Length: 182
Image 1 (cartoon, rainbow, N blue to C red):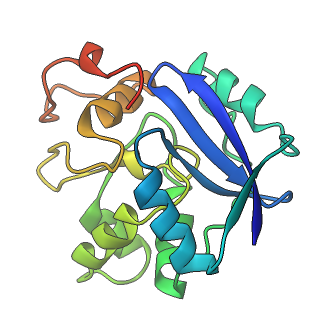
Image 2 (spheres, rainbow, N blue to C red):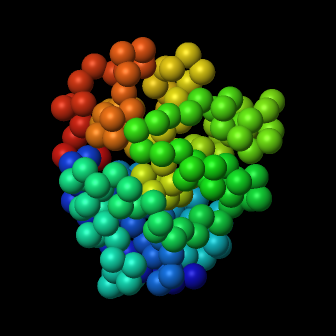
């Protein structure tokens, strides 16, 4: 599979994304390339990257999102691959509006697997299209800020940017500690 590779400088550091020409197949932060390549190989087998055009015009949409137009990415087509269950979880993630969060348990109920919060968490951790498939909007049952492949400081920044933070969230200390590049 040939994917067109792009880079975008964001307030969270360099973002890498890849497109098959019709949808976004990968979006992750610089420094996470090994994880990303593993996820893509698992989903599509042999994947080759080529720097190319941005046929979906994602860069302007990312710029809009980071400039406060939080719904700019809502309708970007994605091709996540994955198992049927993972796809169900990732589809459910896209229904969480900007400015809101869900717990893993709430997401499990939404996908009609109320006892599968751990499986939902695992699927969440394997999301290949960060930000667009907003896995950062999932928090622990106690409102604790839980794992994020891009790092908890980035998760905190994204939730703060979207207005989803509340006083009862257990957050790391300082979003300014996000490195310019990962």
